[in-house]
Length: 167
Image (cartoon, rainbow, N blue to C red; front, top):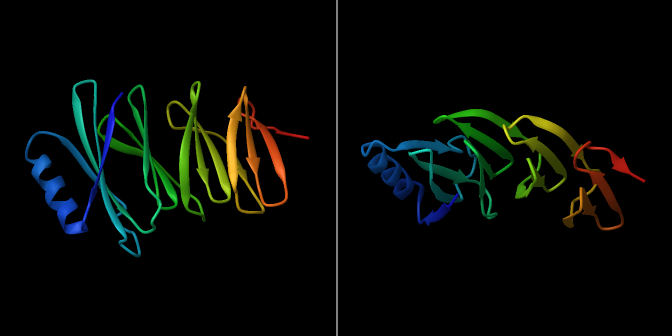
C-alpha cells in the first residue's frame, strides 16, 4: 500500500488542500487541530479499497509524522499520539506524555515508539500491550520476535507476541 507524505508551508495551505479534496469526493480529515503550538502541516495520501484518503496533520514538534496501512486500518503517528482510521473515520486515538518517534510493523503488530513508551497494537488498532519506561529511549530494533530497547544506561528486551519483559 503506497502512502505519500507532503509537507506544507502553513496550516492555511494545508486547510486549502483538504478543502479542495473534500469537494472531489475524497475522504478527508484533519488531525491535530488541538495542537497547542502549530509547528508543521502535513498530509498523508493513500487509497484503500477504492477509497481515497487525504489525511491532514497539524504538528506541534519538529518530528516527522508517520503512517502505516494494514488491511483497512490506517495508523497515523504524530505529536504525542497515534490515531487509527478505519472505514473513513477515526476509530481510536491513543495519547502518551511523550513525543511520537516512529512505527515498526512486525507480522500482525504495529509497534508505536514514543520517547518513553512503546505501544503494541494488533492489526485492527487494539492495544495488545504497552511498556512505559523510566528513561528516554535512545535506540530500538526488532530481532526475531523481540524488540530491543536501549536507554542511556540500560537495555531491555520485550517479547512482541506477549509483551513480557525478558531478564
